[in-house]
Length: 219
Image (cartoon, rainbow, N blue to C red; front, top):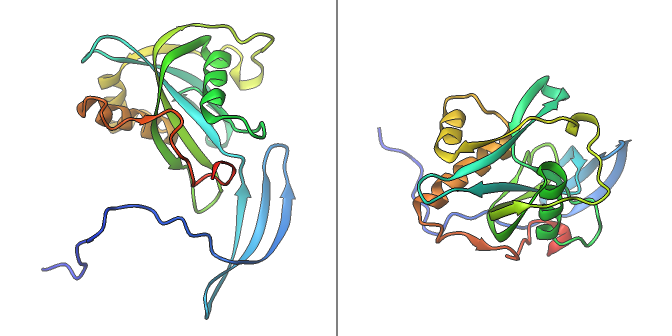
């Protein structure tokens, strides 16, 4: 049976086009994020109401070491109560400091979570973590030429205290994703993006200060 869908004739790309909001109200004020309800006009006769989490955005980092073809990535294991799982992740953190440069924020998180910094930074992938439920924009950086670093005055608390960490061959990490052994959405995106980027000899990596118009604070 032939498909009724035609082939795209333009490059595949999301269209940034916020639609008119006719009303907005605070439903719940949380400790970190708020839930809001907004009425949105999608056309002359198409009006919808959506409740969602208003999110500050975040950054994540794939720390990488090793020779070509034998790259390793550093993973951390953290308890995530909503899913009741100690899941394997990459270092990440919120963009909760107004005006902070995303690359600087990523470097801060790398120091705070795994006592590392890096000399070579690139943008690996940008994602909406759950666009039907929250407004989070997340940028994943690839950090290479890593070296020890200390986050002065930072003390790991809560779920971050005593987190297991470990270097994992990139190929093994990709296998864990495809085998269904790793489920964290950011880690899945980051690992698979790094795998594809390596297959393309890193030529598709974007510079660390690449534009990020999808995040309202960085347009």
